[in-house]
Structures are given as structure tokens and as C-alpha cells.
Image (cartoon, rainbow, N blue to C red; front, side, top):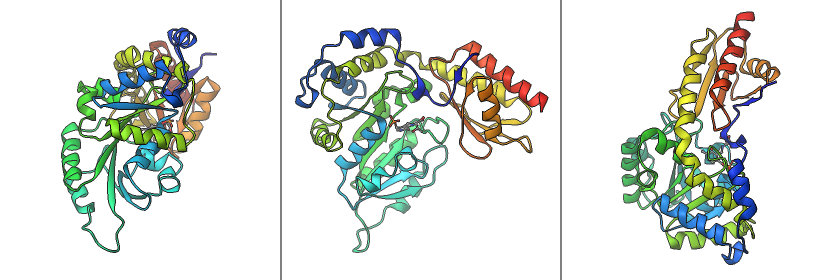
Length: 344
Ligand code: TLP
């Protein structure tokens, strides 16, 4: 039976070329900054996003947490969009480990307005925590892989900077945002003091993310990574795959976006289904609208046909395309789904 794994782009396997590069990687002890492959990845990653330096971390979650810890002190307040991955899916690390108070602003398409931010910024007062950081997410996961409007990002950044806040971008899928908008990653990252981006999602590396910022910020971040147990020694075997991610895999993301659009259009035209958010990148938010059918029932039916997906609510399902999904997979998912609703 065919397997079509649409749960996430995190399921991607390293490419054959990655495995070859990993086996040949020159390595050293990265805690002493002596791994030439990690050093090369960090320098290249920093240059790509237009920052002075970068730090190789185990995961996106670790990169975001290290950024929060490095920009702030425990007890301070961080402003986030209400559905931000950092708040929603990172196990509360921002409170438990960084000791921060989240101030959530409900957004539209993954972003709040400059007016909302102005209202949220409180004057100094003996009763308030100090607000020191603002985070945005591009593309925005829970909004359905939406690309943030760059003008709005820049306006928000301007207001935040005037108020003395630092800015961090959760750019787990920043290369998807660049591919979809035609705006280069340097411009997308420019308003932010730091940016985290993942190598192990649509870019197919087996593990790893980069946190980029000023040289001074990254030196402090390196220490916080060590506190979290993220000093990885001969990590060059992973960095070798990451270099291939940045040099090669970033260039093919439009293919995933086109397939996501095609899959969404065809699924959305099946009576009983509805596309819940505009498909701008590789994430599809699908709603089951047929009375009496839940998302979990459709996920179960798909599973019996080798199609893997995750129900995100009673009637909602998220599907994610990536380099292991081809046109024949799209046809297979559409045919299987049409047959399911026909035979109900
Ligand atoms: N997202 C994963 C799950 O955690 C939900 C996924 O399958 O989409 N920021 C954003 C915007 C993310 O989407 C993710 C992963 C992360 C950070 C965390 O990255 P990892 O999984 O490497 O810790």
C-alpha cells in the first residue's frame, strides 16, 4: 500500500546526498567551537539571514527558548500572537524555564495590528512586569502556514523598538515565507534582533535549527544553549546535512506550495470538505463540513489507506506537503477522499 505522510514537513527523511555528506563530514568538539562543519553552517546561515553570527541548536524549540532566555530576565513580559508556536506548542518553556509572563494578542492570519500593540504597551508602573521582548512567527503555523505581511511586520517592529523592546522571529519556515512572497530572507529577518530557522522541516535535515543575531547576542546564547544541555560535540555530522538544506533544499520549496494549492483546491471541491484558510505555503487547514462526520473519522479512514494526517480539532485537519509528496500522492489522496465521501 502507498504511504502518504501529510502530518508535517518534519517527517522528511534526509536525502541520499545528505547521507553521503554526513558520512564524510570533518568534525571536532563543537563545545570548543572546533567543529569545522558546524562553524561553516553557522557562518553560512548567519550570512543568509543577514546577521553577524548564528548558533546551531538541536531543535526549533531549543532555538526559540535560547532566544527568550538571552533577550530577557526571569519575571519579564513577552508579547506574542495568541496562537504562537512558542506559546502553544513549546511545553510552556517560556514560563517554566525562561520565567517569562506571556502577553497574548489575538491576531488575524497570524499577526496582530500595530494598534493592538500600542494598546498592549503599558507605561512603567510599580504593579507591572517589565516588557522586554516581542516575538512574531513567519510563516505562522496555526494560521495555516500564512506569510506575514511585511509592511505590517515593519510597522510593528518600529513601535516595539521605540518602546525599547527586543524582537525575535520564530522563522521555523522562513524559507517558505521567502519562496511564497518573493521577498528574500534577509529582508524578512531585518526588523528582528534574532531569528530562529529550522533545517529539519521542509529542508529535510535529520535534526537541527539555527539561531542568528548579533555576535554579542550569539556569544550569550551559546552559554544558554549549554545550560539546556545543547552543547553537541561532534555535531558536524548533522551540520553537513544542514548545509545541504540551505544550499539545495531551500530552492525547491515552491514545488511544495504548488502541490499544497492543488491538493487544497481539489479537496475543497469535494462536498463535505472546506478549506479553512488561504493556502499560501505548504500547510492546508481542512474542515469537515459533512454532518455526522468528524475529523478523527476521516483521519481513521485515510489511515486505512496509508494516508497519515492529524486532526487538530473536532472538525479540523492539518495537512502539510514536503519533498516526499509528489503529484501521484496528491491524486491518490483526492481519489481516496472522494471515494470515502461518495460511499458514506
Ligand atoms: N512545529 C511542529 C509541531 O511542533 C507542531 C510541526 O509539525 O509543525 N516554530 C514553529 C513555527 C514550528 O512549526 C515548530 C515545529 C517549531 C517552532 C519547533 O521546532 P522543533 O519541532 O524542531 O522543536
